[in-house]
Length: 307
Image (cartoon, rainbow, N blue to C red; front, side, top):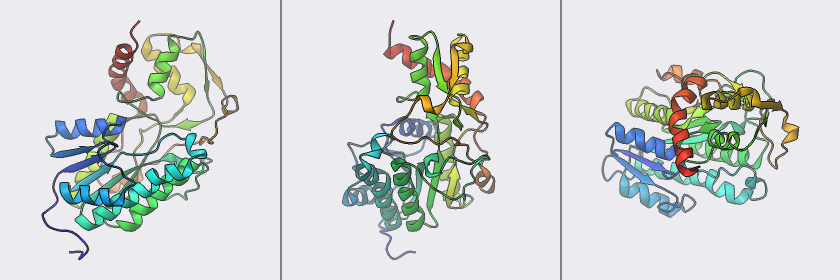
């Protein structure tokens, strides 16, 4: 036993940070459906930038697995507020990793495709060189490194991208709204990625956590994105098709038409080879996931935006 671990009692159950966010809500729902003992901590309940508070939370709750869904996700704002983003995306995971090292918990930390340069032409492997081009990407990479260095045997980094779901603002909900307000829509066709349903990712995180506890899933980096790939233009056409409207109302354009403070990766397709080593199936094709997810997302939009 590591002498630094605070082993007053055996760890048990799951603790989810960022529990109020889109992914956090889905992780909690999946854990509840599985009958798992769970502690949900949103931003108000736990300030990840406070190392003492993080240590006390883990010492009190004694989870076997921590799933860190908390993050600064305002990509453009991070360009001018990098120190604030780093406190959450870099220092926060570092504090969690330190607390997990003390209590013996497994840490599943959710990261992003933005740690890569986005200039590849084939899917990024889990061990591909990182080279973030934005402040957001740099802060997320700092968090990854803290987890992997502090918890070489119990730290898991799960990179995801193009995430959507029912529990928060996201691209699918935005496009549903714009379809009702615009005759045509210009959407970027020179950025490629993998639309990923947050509920699918939640299930994958739980499988990985169970594999970690069973000793069948090696620690390290995994990629949690849907299979297949498309562009934002192709993604929007599929959304329009599911809405029952003409996909040709969506028109392709280039990134130069939508200049943003933070550069967007032109290529965000991630490979999934490490899940095979863990005996876990990668996520299904993005179209199949979107087709299943869409009715619930549409209902939420209609409820929040009544005619």
